[in-house]
Length: 331
Ligand code: M7G
Image 1 (cartoon, rainbow, N blue to C red):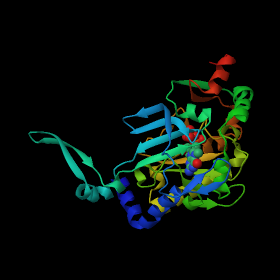
Image 2: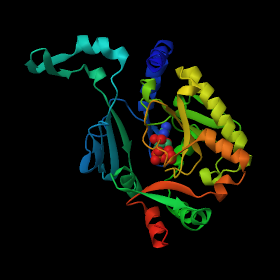
Image 3: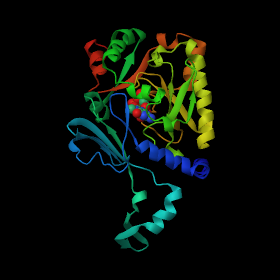
């Protein structure tokens, strides 16, 4: 109930801002060279997409991850049906065509053809996609890995230095070369500052699946493993101001938020995930998510906490890091 009240509240408070942000974000396109190109909303860049393989799909999540070629470049396209929002029900009921499938006693089922504006599919395009992107989205078996500090130094760190995803998109955000109009809050301080903005997994249409990320301005912190007590002011700042900004913009209180870091992350530049507590975001399980509140407490009690602890995390079958752990007999 509280969630839907909050949802109605953001709809009431900022209907224009929200649709404006969504429209603008559609017009942003990162060209893969660290620049951003504007692209007409009506242009269908997927027109010539050639599907080579479905990487994964889920009837429950209502999404599909497709690998293919876009103008001779490797690409991954993610299609996802979005939640049905309470505030669209009136339009949906009055503006749709209904085709009867079957009727039996008091029961009947239909196929409802919604008006165009309520029939959108959230689409994410990664192009050019690397082999690593293709693997990231491919359904694979997972294995739990145990990483000591020594393993981190001898196996993980050399691997991520060589093979991690580019964080150009992160720098584009920090330098306002992309997604500038999506920023929800920013603190310009070079040491404790950060940028808070919607994660690209969130379409921002309802707070039920709210998902934002706070990206640290500091560029030298790769992950949890680099954190020491000297970073507490940064972490505390992100925690406090991030929650305040979300309350102010979306009317979602701190008690409704799950605020955490991933270990291992996909992108090795410090960032914090803010998701709705009632939304089971991918990667929010105990094997990968570390609550920011716990991280802060751990560093308060021991500055070297993340340099002394064994950390556990899942790796997927085709992850190169898993092969490294296997080669060195750690799995
Ligand atoms: P992560 O913990 O490094 O890895 O999180 P994960 O992707 O395996 O969860 C990075 C977060 O940044 C994820 O939640 C992504 O959805 C999000 N993200 C990734 N990219 C490339 C972008 C982007 O270009 N813009 C925005 N706004 N979010 C992104």
